[in-house]
Length: 177
Image 1 (cartoon, helix red, strand yellow):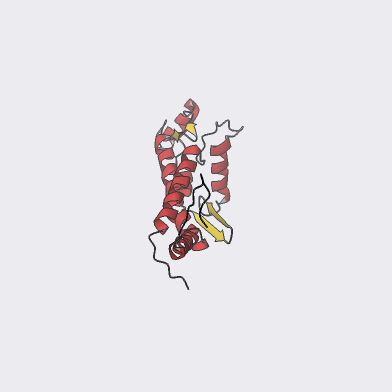
Image 2: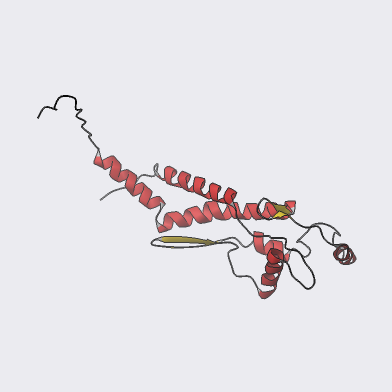
């Protein structure tokens, strides 16, 4: 049938094999296995690096600059053989090691994936140290100097990295039945 006057006829020819390959690769990237690889291989290391940098700089764009140590605390630290004023949030290294050396844990099932950082539950002592760092304490008076957190920088990284993960998956050969 000829198009009527003033109309346009468009014919779209789709190679369904290419579309099915693309969908199969995207499905693989977002599958349980694909998400475990992405979260443990990309997001976990990102969070670890952010935490290491936070300790090294004594704060960052997530936690703000940590409040300096009080004079009394500096005296106690110096008497114990530690640096008086620095490093903040690091005396024995227990807190920093728990945060930065504990890896991450990834759980994934149909419809969801979850990354936990640090990867394992803290001991009671570590939990107390994390809680004090995150929220501060009333006695002895300790200001919050957060060691864990994420912000829009982290969100932007994760979203861009996920887009790259899905895009790179398009190069993986997939056999369709």
